[in-house]
Image (cartoon, rainbow, N blue to C red; front, side, top):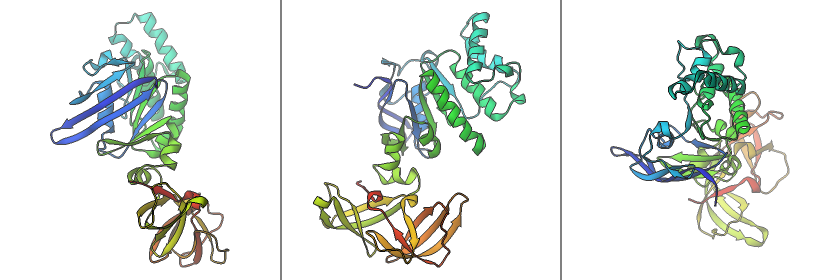
Length: 358
């Protein structure tokens, strides 16, 4: 049985007629970083607040370290929290901000000072102890927020959109700093974000949420490569969706033939496939090959025309028309470029044509 530090068992939270969390079951393992990922309004922050105790579930129970804490006040749950707005006191120094949780818990001054310097060394900011928040950068302020959450050695670290107020480059840098810090401490962490890149870069596992429910839980690889619903495939990364009908199943060869908009595609066979069944396929735009029109014929290679081209610096984004009006989005590394109106060949590798069963 997994060693869970946090468990949500059948947790439901309503606001009037709105069901923000709908019978959520989730186990977060000891020492892992779990990300709650989803669009605004999906219920991820509500779930976090059920863990912190700021929300009391209407149904279900919350467990931390094996103990039922559903009715335990927030300040007795041994949690460290980091918020998106930093929430630093402008009139206090960095050291005083970090030490504030210890002061309100009544720790002796000498012990407070010792723990504050330990926390500042963790985030490599001991030389800024006497600075005020206005004297340090946004990234440094976020580090101070991390130190303040960790200074009293909580069992669990909770982070609610902690990088949303930072610019893109700093966000990327802070992702790695947060991951490194959590690895060094071996602490259990719950991270809330709507940013899929953050979730994939940071997490041991990801819980993708939609409309108050958990759509899928898995490692970043599992979520990206094997989404279990159209919502997950669409929300994580870019996808081309193809709705078709099974024409034939060749079980010994491990392939099936799907008809989509006048095209016949070979895809990996599944046990639940049978001729005549409607199927939803998806393929990532960067898994599609764009070739010159003169390229050799191949399985799943079809003639097409470049409808639109967009330059994205490290890659090119194409909209290509194939078959009977099907538009595919294709992304390439930019080494070979095609122009709008140019005839091309589009190759959808069999192994990358994935079936979604809903």
